[in-house]
Image 1 (cartoon, rainbow, N blue to C red):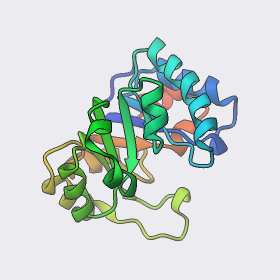
Image 2 (cartoon, rainbow, N blue to C red; image 1 turned 30 degrees about the vertical axis):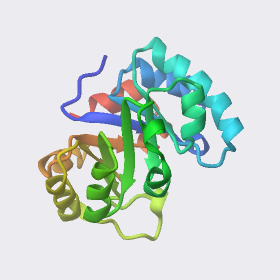
Image 3 (tube, rainbow, N blue to C red; image 1 turned 180 degrees about the vertical axis):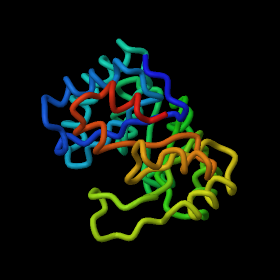
Length: 200
């Protein structure tokens, strides 16, 4: 188990992965991050459900929470406890479905969205993108002042996302974030354990 000062959520992206995707997920799960968000936006609901079934089993083996993404109905059918939703989907999710989940997260890009997500029942949010990142090429980052404003506007944990690594993770903690979401770093690094150890 890797002990980091900050909580780390891994956000998956199969297209960035240089090895078998499930092998990579297992390596990440074995290091016991705070959670793994299975974010595979190119899949149909049925394709996603099949992949999610395998990832949930892997995460369960290592006792790591897995947050399924976007497809609330598929998550409910699989008995998943955690869901991460774009805000426009969260707005449409009825109360009975929300009750099926222990943790609900949402992706937020403004103070107003963060406050709305909290009102809609989120137990945590992600805020970004904070630093320049290839995942959002050409889009200017929102920066640390934005992150601080978001953190001060809600009472639930905020996870920074976008261009975060060992060189800048301390600054997101100082801005008030509970931790960070990392996608490309964890999908592409040579050594997952070493990468996580560097996030002190």
